[in-house]
Amino acid sequence: MKRRLENLNALITGGSKGIGRAIATRYAEEGANLFLCARSAGRLNDTAAELRKLGGKVVSHVADVSDQKSVREMVQHALKELGQIDILVNNAGYVKVSPFLDYSLEDFEQTIKVNLYGVFHVSQAVLPGMIKRKKGKVVNIASTGGRWGSRNQSAYNASKHGVVGLTRCMALEMAPYKINVNAICPYSVETEMVLPVFEKNSQLLGISQEEIIKRLKAASPLGRIIQPADVAHLAVYLASEESDSMTAQSISVCGGYLMI
Image (cartoon, rainbow, N blue to C red; front, side, top):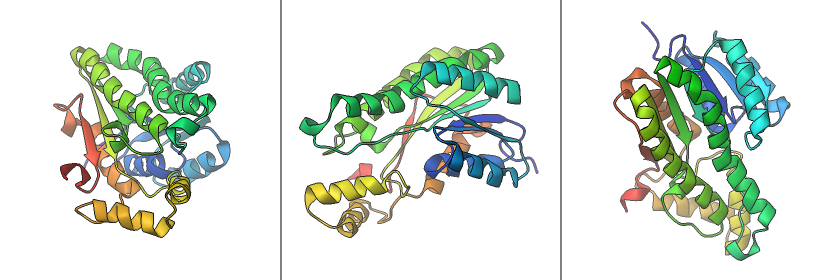
C-alpha cells in the first residue's frame, strides 16, 4: 500500500523538537524524505539520526529563519540534497511572555522576525521551484493566538495574526500554480517551548503552573492539552493529495475552545 507522502521531499523549519519533530516523524512514517533545520545542531542532529531509522533520507542543516541570507543558503543546500522541495512546513517559532508595556523593542522585534519574517524568507526562497513545477504544498504553523487576543503575549499574537494573513495572501497568489497554502492554528501545545510560558504566566498571575494547566483543560470542551502529534496528523493531510481542494485556510486544533 502506497504511503501518503511516498517519495515526496519536505523542508521543515524548527524540526528538532516539539511540533516540528512530531511533523517530521509523521512525514517520515508516510514515506517522505526530510530536510530539517533549526538554530542549534545538537538536538537537530539527534532528531535526524532517530528519523533515519524509519528508512527515508533525512538531512539536517543549522539555519536561522529570521536571517534572509541564512535561509537562502539553507534552501540551496536543500535543493542540492533533495533535488526539489514538494512540501514546505514553516514551523520555527519563538515566544516571549511579557505585559505589553514591559516588552523591550528587541524582544518584540525578535518575535516578529522569527515567527513572521521567517515564514516570509523561507517561502520566498522555496516557492519559485513549486511555481515552475505547478505543484506544491505549504503548511504554516500559526496559532489560535493568531485568531484572538491574549494577555501577556502581544508580540506572539501579533506575529501569528500576521502568519494567518500571510497564508491567505500567499494562497491566492499561488492558486494559479496549483500550490496549496494553509495554516494550522494550535491552542497551547505541550512542548518545551510552552513550559516557560506556563512558568512566566504563573508568576504574572500569582497562581501555580498546575492551576494554569487546570484552567487550560477546563477551557476546552474536550478537557485536554493539545499534543504535538495532534498537529502532526493534520499536517500530513495538508501535505498530501487529499487536501488538493483546500487552500487559504487556517484550521484550529484547540479541543473545541473556539466554539465557546
